[in-house]
Image (cartoon, rainbow, N blue to C red; front, side, top):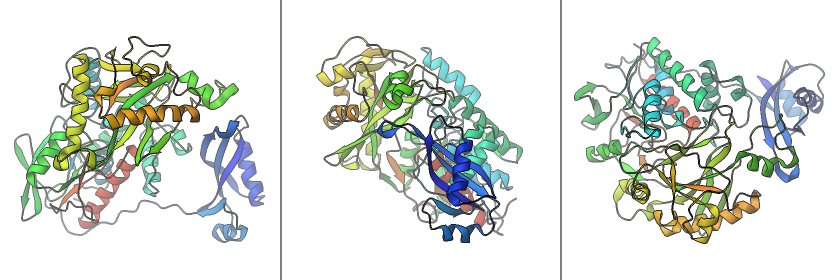
Length: 525
């Protein structure tokens, strides 16, 4: 239990110790132990500040003291430790976790940690195999539809920037950060307001967590897709994998946003699904130095400042265009998971030291845009764009266009000073015909708006690579407040693929909640 002092603003190049001292002065304290809680950069309004939150321990009667101060920036902070409640009913069969992305990983870890011996079924390979398969594809080899950027140990998040930000306000977010740190994530994720791990370090953390699951009695089966479910009077009785039925009373369905064949199987089985809004668009690349100059001005390149990142959004006529998954110093990744369809994503290492910055520019798409294709209409919408991109180049090379050419409507033929980072290579084409007109029109309308918000963002040399289609799941697997599928008691749809999370943090939290739901019902083995 501590005092939390927020909103402490200091010049970016002032030592951190000044923030600790400022917190003590604001509270009028001479005794107590201050420590850094969170730190962020604010580069708005032509000034660059670091904004700190500081914890102060060792103050008698912290809660009463905070109330007495009556300062909005000072409050009493009580830590909410994760304390599972254990049921007493024996579980006849081991719980099954389907998918080893963030949701499945954290669910399986918590179950294993407390003696529930989960069985994990992952359609893709281990990270060691995944790296080999992905590099082979990026070097011109064949796509493996079962093991790629989307499928395998760690899920799609293992090949990303490893962002640990979320808009949910859930105490389990602290637990997620602590667990990631326990298994090798750097100390800074506990202090930064916008923490990230980077794909290089995140993979090591994921592997360490998976080994902890196995060491605690869990079993992990790679290259084992789930192909069916067995229900008995509306209750889950088994999952089908490897041609066999695996008996279970509780299964967590954490398959990720790209498990299109699984969504089809669920639909055919009678599991209730609903179409869900998502977004599509392009990846935009700038030189990171240009983004640094736009954000930091004359201080760009200062060793006390991290590579700059941005968040941009624009709304018009009920539709949104926004930056998504911004990767400072990163690359545009080849993220296809199906033959004949190009998909892009963003990825960066922990150091964020690449030449370019990239982000998705995504336009919102709603069920009203899908036509009458039922709950799987969003998948068909995504596929049409991905296949149009593949048909455009006739290969895995991605279609690409400068911002200047996109805005003028000319196909163009070569990059400017921003070199493309898409690993398989690009071809220059007009990108507008790949998308429904409302997407291309919204992108053209938004780029100048973003240029006014961030100087140079819409410069002619900025590079667009298409398409970005996997921003989130196009499907929601309907569940009750008790987390179970409305169609199958015992089946818990979970995480981003089920439509209940967006990103590593919220997916991990949803995975923990799924595990806690099983634990409160049943006793450990």
